[in-house]
Amino acid sequence: MPKQNEYKVVILGSGPAGLTAAIYASRASLEPLVVEGGDGSDPTDLPGGQLMLTTEVENFPGFAEGIMGPELMQRMRQQAERFGAEFATGAVRRADLRQRPFVLELGESRVSAQTLIVATGARARWTGLPDELEFRTKGLGVSACATCDGFFYRGKQVLVVGGGDTAMEEASFLTKFAREVTVVHRREGFRASRIMLEKARANPRIAWLTDTVLERYVGNEQTKLTGVVVRNVKTGATREVPAQGVFMAIGHEPNTAIFRGQLEMDETGYLLTKDGTTATSVPGVFAAGDVADHRYRQAITAAGTGCMAAIDAERFLSH
Image (cartoon, rainbow, N blue to C red):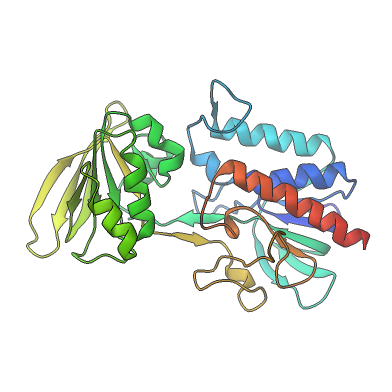
């Protein structure tokens, strides 16, 4: 429950982008309210963002020995609290951006904001197979980020699921580590651009499994992932394919539904920002992190744009 009704800055999201924005806004004496998300409707929608579902993070600067995702987010939250950021758990049900101050409905509460930083992130699309949530949240071999986790699969067999440019990029990147990379796609044709597909096709370390879908993960918490049962969509035949890692590359979905018709976004739903800033199409509203970034999607880049959004909001208010 928010402590007051009016705020200079409200930050939606408590991942690396939202918490970094909170740190900077708090240090600027803007006394921000951070709406953490996590209303209980989705077991993967947790305060702290997607890093709460990650085990070890080894590529965030400052942690030479690595750090667990939840611990990293807890430290960032404590840092924001130290400077005076206020936190409210729950999801914003409705946002009215037609005039300032903006009005946000949070559960039974309603708050107004002179500026708004949207850092609600994006979710990877998954197959929804049984046990998938456990395999990915416990670090048992299922991921949606080759850049984040590829290093852990050095010398192993991995599958990349998808047929677009992202799948081709992930597969090519994983050949730097994995012994064998197989692209699994439900059709024979690919959505990937010609140049990306040809590049992947030319890589001798990438194998192809088309007209095929995943049916079941094989393994447990002790053995981790050992293989995947796949099914040919034309013949119906199933077989088990050995694999120690599966990387999902079937797209991401930005958490921007409540802003449709109010903020400019691309066809996928990513918020559009003005060049070189985090400013959106509505003056006083700023976007940070994966909600506006479909290219990098890293904790460190999200944190960087969180810093930018807080500075942009501070300058907007000062003018």
